[in-house]
Length: 216
Image (cartoon, rainbow, N blue to C red; front, side, top):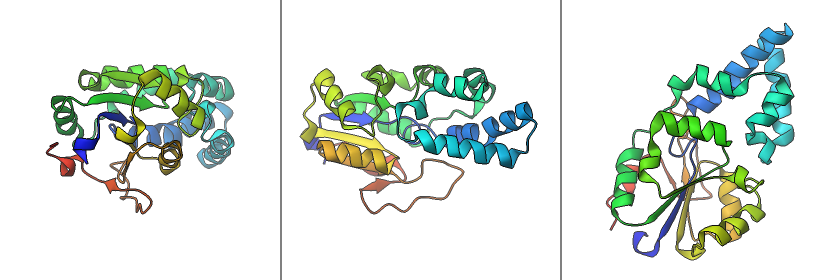
């Protein structure tokens, strides 16, 4: 409903960028490095990590590289650079962002990613050239899963939530935005190019942004 949308809030990982990088990093590379460091099997390391991930899921720590660096005694930022060649923009994104920019709508990247992860990804992809503002929720000390983030964001951006579109690949986060009252919500059903498309019933969902063009 483009005529009734002024502001577009876009998630980064799995929404503008292929989630394959992050899934590979946290579920393959980190367990492999941990297994090597502790002299245990990959499966043991992965099981330990998954339980640690679940303990802080949805909290700001989940997304915090400093937290994991300390928790796992691993050089997390360096390890990300080791596989930075896997950071990739979704192929349907450039055309979509160009069209949005040309339409004059306000484009804001809103990510839970840690600032160091964010800067590495911007450096690799240059998606910032399309955006009016880039916000990491670490600035607010709370992630998109929580209502206080949305309240602080509204104060900062002064957007009309009824005329705002929010796009994300996390259903939990979309539910949070819905609770806050964001008027237009869109889910990404294929965040990881190496995995099958997700079935999504709760929200309108896309697998290709070009299906939303032209922007009238």
